[in-house]
Length: 560
Ligand code: GLC
Image 1 (cartoon, rainbow, N blue to C red):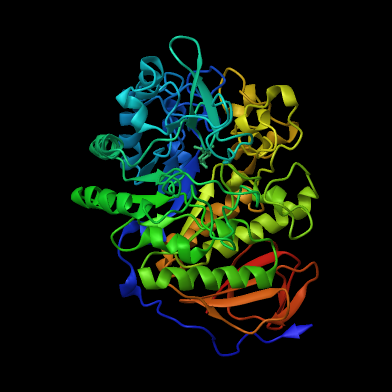
Image 2: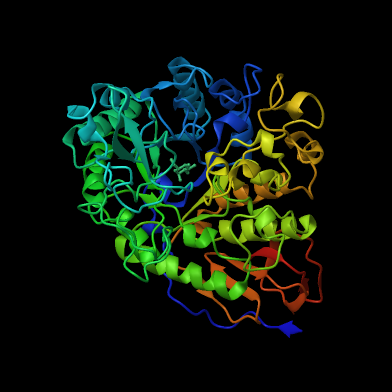
């Protein structure tokens, strides 16, 4: 099939260079999951010193910023998303001195640092919560969380029908200091993660102070965990039997615990603080909302700077679906003036090399390994598509190595709290959290000298940074090249629109300033007239006589 790609552009264009403002508008931000990135002290668990030592890898990769998942003092009931002290580093990750050294070294290398902030809930080991339990009913500290009497004759039933995201009821009953069963407390996640009551002024004050603490430490921004969850509907009303997890479904009005309009006032206050500091400090919302239009509310000019695009992450490898989500995302962000963001993997979902290894339309979480060759081919193509889009892109550690999810972890090593709670997310998340490989051989493939907290598969050596460095066909070198091009040609990430060109079914063709990006999501090659000079491709792209064969599941960038 021969196609001509030089049809006139469709869609709008406002890619004028003058549109770009802050560093974050087109930044590529790399997520480090500290426990699985690099282990500096050889205890089998990654740490801040390990991250600091490996910063040169991130510099060479060409990312702009590093987002670190939580490293705060925590009993680790949810891998650090259960924070006991927001101003302390967990000893397993190091010390405040290590955090300071990491921030300084990163800045010295031109990398910005974004830290995770967990404001929806604390750990049950947080001082406020421990005292609230200890002091019993009537303790003023209980008002900082959601304590309620139970229903039923003896209060033996939970106060409402909400379920935890990790499965089971979202309420746990307390025991009063005299040993009798007492009130219940709300936890949208694990029982070890009690939800704060954001109606209480002390909670808001505390988080404003925590923001300042880390801004004073020099961080460049925050990733706001469960940003859509802080405010609960008045009276904590029952949901009814219609199903609990309507994170991305607004068909019946959404949930009373997510995406309530009241959250926005909190972010307006935070924005004032961020703007007080020099140097473009930012915040990015983890907000699972029913629509990208609802997501756009979080990034209005006086709120946060970015929000993750989970609609994009959950889109399967199909041209029409991808084009639609790209258009809808860009259109939703344009009126609020925020950059669109793009993400394919993170620490909560099956890696995209595995998600795409099965039939299109498959689930976001899977334990099926699928066809690994196919998955990697699509993952590489998907990455080049993502990096050609206007806005900011998020990478998750190890995707630059083309790592698959580890789908065969034995049950006895699993740590994801949802694995231990029936009907929850089913513990899929350990598969994307296996420590990443740095070297072909050696203890834990260079992760550290003391093994690895989750077992690494045999294929890790061949996928290591060492094995891939210098191999022009490797995924690592593809990422390095793509990020080099993005840096050298700022037009790639700029603007708020792509110009679509006519393309056959299953193929996407769009223009960006000075570039054309062609994406074949089908399983057969597509022949067409070359749109320019080949710059980079996710797989070999033979060209002859002014024509090219774009192979199955392949993306190519062309300069024009
Ligand atoms: C976010 C985090 C996830 C965590 C949850 C509870 O979704 O990404 O890892 O389990 O919040 O804090």
